[in-house]
Length: 489
Image 1 (cartoon, one colour):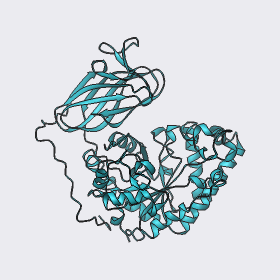
Image 2 (cartoon, rainbow, N blue to C red; image 1 turned 90 degrees about the vertical axis):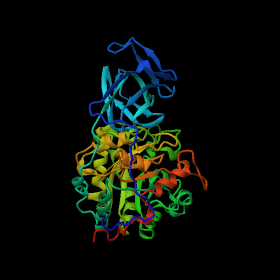
Image 3 (tube, rainbow, N blue to C red; image 1 turned 30 degrees about the vertical axis):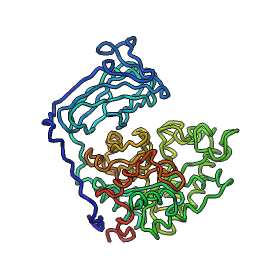
Image 4 (cartoon, helix red, strand yellow; image 1 turned 120 degrees about the horizontal axis):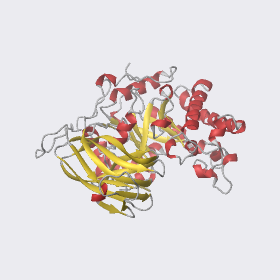
């Protein structure tokens, strides 16, 4: 691969199927009734809702009940399988977690439906033999009738498509083009390591990762939350922007920038703390009214905030530092105000921000990382350079999260990198390769997901996993990056 030399001491990976496994049967199908398995929490077997098969269905209640339904499945050979859940959701759209042998591997999403329907997740690698398959309450409130396990084709990206993506900003700086080319060159082959750390190279996060693995992340994640005018008025940010610049110019690293946008002060709800204005429950603004032109003062207030952030983005641009720009993240969850009014108003805001920063302010060092968490929130190919997903599966869960990877890859036909733009648990590189779910980069969130003070915290990620991930043949660390100021030249 051009301009990239990985360390010779990293072992090559190869997956060896179990010698005792049978032959993979492309026509294999197994169906299990949910009521024949076991339940946890307040989940109950019922039969009052019409349309079920078998003797009943399992009613999985709300997210705080610990409700779950587990069935025993069996597959004859190692390989990729599709899970088809038969569910009714008369109480509205719901998402709930899928666990395989107690490890969360993804979620099943169901729109509101007054009758039972089939909802599939595809491309899951399952080893031969028996396994516990669990559907656990996340949003809850579903009627779960049955699950089918079906053989499926291995998800494969076409090799010829890996380098076709182009930056949406046609005036992007040369170094921005170089960084994007590098990321597209490794797409599907390697994973860039990343870590959020406001203190950068001097952070506790970087120190404990280096102590655990002997290496440092290739990507530094920083957040412009304190540069929001309603927060800067109380506590000016602590040189975060300069640390990002230094990481690229002095360390040769890559920088991703997020913005927990603290709403304009006049929209922070009375009684709420000033620093909490990025959360939906803390603000009074109506984004739909603003984006529809019904609240021109609100629109002006949002533009003023974007202009304030543009001032700092220009500082980075003036240093010729390209950044992976990830604004308005996790919109589909609804917990941040920019995602609290549905996808239509969010998409309008995303496109408006793009126009304001790129065309009005002429900032051309941004690689646009969209992180809407659902296809219906996608703002369009002309506004997105990468698709990001934020995943927090629990504690010490290192699965590849292939279900979400495959889902995100299908959001668009454009060949863009799919990245784990924020995560609580590391993903096992061996499982990513096995499952054909090679996230192009990951970036672990800060604090307790890495350390407690200056000590490594193993609540979410064990020391052995930091060592494995950062020393894996498919994971690129800071010392292994090429010269990104001359890449491809």
